[in-house]
Image (cartoon, rainbow, N blue to C red; front, side, top):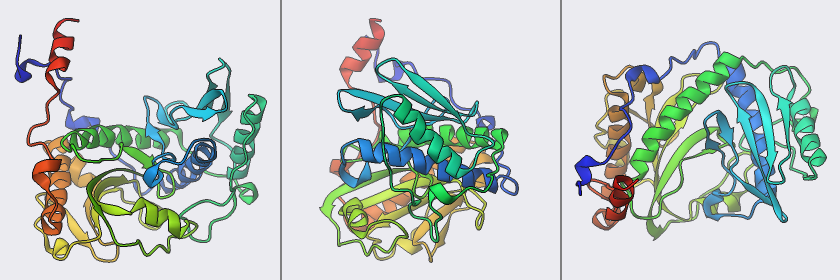
Length: 329
């Protein structure tokens, strides 16, 4: 029987797998997608049970875009998926029924009404809070009737970048045996993130996030964490970036030596940031992003006195049964 080194691995990603992002041109599409994912995410929020740290509300990167995963609805269930490769919102039920709703050429109000109408036509009526979350001066979905820009190629690039980030974040997640979140996309801030927990309680979060209840923020940060994520950018700050932070921020974290060229401390945000372009143009983008994730976590965990020996794996490998299963297929 072979050892760990004999296990099959998929081909290594080529640097060209990381797409060039048109930061000067795609802010309109990113803004549109941010709002549409909020509609989709809020449907998941109201239908599923509450999971700790808001883990029951994010979306997941899929083979076509962003999806809810299976959402319960009485004795049945459904899934919503924003197809960023071809354009529609897909609504699929376990009863074998489905509907599609175009994304391009619609307003936020039109998409909001269309999504709820599609759910009702499938026998799954829902009602969601129509005000976008975590956006200052947000306009309610049902009154946002102005035409919204949506470039299908820009949407596809969003998806391609998310696919790459999700893959590396999953690799990073595998090195932690303590409590750790899924790799998921929070539609409030429109980013992809994975979070590690020390297991120790944290001081109450101060709250104050626009259109985001303080008690939800406090529950999300009820315990000490380090987190790494990928933010697509906004109209005000269009350059995509990777970020890393800790809550609570340990003393000395801002001065930590992060082992990734191009990383910088953003004092106003209380986090390290690394431009997406620095990763994309690195000789080995995957390794560069892993170094950023691992070194920022290590710095925060050491400064905060985490029991890293009990929580982390030096070289994560699957258990012996995994090898037997693979070798006897």
